[in-house]
Every structure is written in structure tokens, then in C-alpha cells.
Image (cartoon, rainbow, N blue to C red; front, side):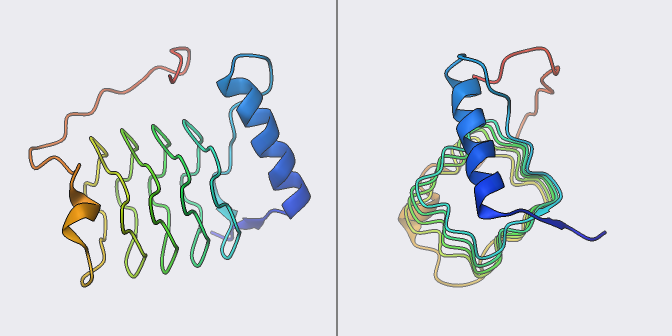
Length: 147
């Protein structure tokens, strides 16, 4: 399946509407699924609860980004910079994080079922919040708020 490329201005508008949605002042949840976001500079982006499933973030800079509770199933993060990014409670099933820089990333309660993690260079602190027990998934109905 071919991914859609998104322009910087459209992405910026989508993130602004998403921020409004997160603060419950209108806007809408970011739907960046099936998008080619490779190489994008998303440093510090607030993507909590966003739908980024089946997207390509290869070579993107997501340093200090917040992806808590995001749906990132089947998403590519190859060679992305994920340093100090937060993926708490995120759905990362079948995600490819190989060769990504994940120093300081937070994966607390993230679902990493069948995720491809970097083979080398994983600092112990990067996985400090990775729980070692089986993940239990509660499917959230679309009408139940994310946060």
C-alpha cells in the first residue's frame, strides 16, 4: 500500500487541531495513519492518543515527543530519533523500531507484541519502564475518551 505524503503546513494544522482536542476546546484527534512522515522534524510534538498506525516515521526526529496512548500499530520508526520520547500505554504491536535511537525513551505499559527493537545499543535506562510481564490489552471503544 502506498503511503500518502503530508506537507509541513498540513501537518502543522493537524497537530494544532489535535492539541485543541487534547485540551477539550474543539479540534479533532490527529489521524496520521497511512502517512509517509519519514524525515519529519517532530521534536517535542504532542501526539498523545493520535492515530499513527501503518505510517512511516523512518529518519524522523521525535526527540522529546509525547506518544502516550497513541495507536502506532504496524508503524515504521527505522533509524528515527526517539530519544526521551514517551510511549506510555501506546499500542506498538508489530512496530519496527530497529536502528532507532531510543535512549531515555519511556515504554511503560506499551504493547510491544511482535515489535522489532534495535538489536544493539539499547541502553539499560531506555527500557527502565518496560514491564517484563505479559501485556493485557483493553480495547477502548471509540466513544470513550483517550485521556
